[in-house]
Amino acid sequence: MQKLQMLRQARNLLGIGTDIVYLPRFQRLLMKYTNDDDVYAIKSSSALDRINDKFMHPIERATFRSLANESLSKRAKYLAGVWATKEATLKALHCYIPSEHIPPAQVIYTKLLYKTNNTSTGSPQLQFDKNFSTTTPLYSQFFRDYINGKISTLLSISHDEQYLVSFVCLTSK
Image (cartoon, rainbow, N blue to C red):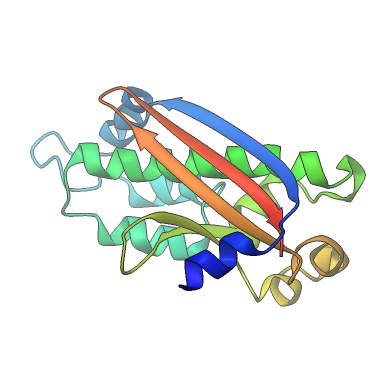
């Protein structure tokens, strides 16, 4: 019933974005930081952390660390999904917000939002960090003017053996 009511509400499309990534690229990145003896052991967590710090929100980094005992393929899909989602979101934001008002990509990727999964359905979703104005006061006006309480996100991710695609849609609330 709630979904039906939500569909009946008039929403304006604000922006769309998509990104496709080559999964073997992310597998190679992970293999570079994996011990030969143990494919699950991280060789240089500080180097991998520095890479992840450039595009992952702290919640995503914690989720990635929780996948340490998972297969290389699963960890690569997670990294690729986060990357593609951030790229698609940035493209969608550029449809909606004037370029001069958008913070740098790294701020958006690491502070503004994070990819998670719906706990009941497992479907991917995007969450805006409610603490963005506090953690990034330089861009608090941007958050108030364009994000907070104003937009909703729709996220779809699909993958096969070699590619992963992410599609993000921004709608008004």
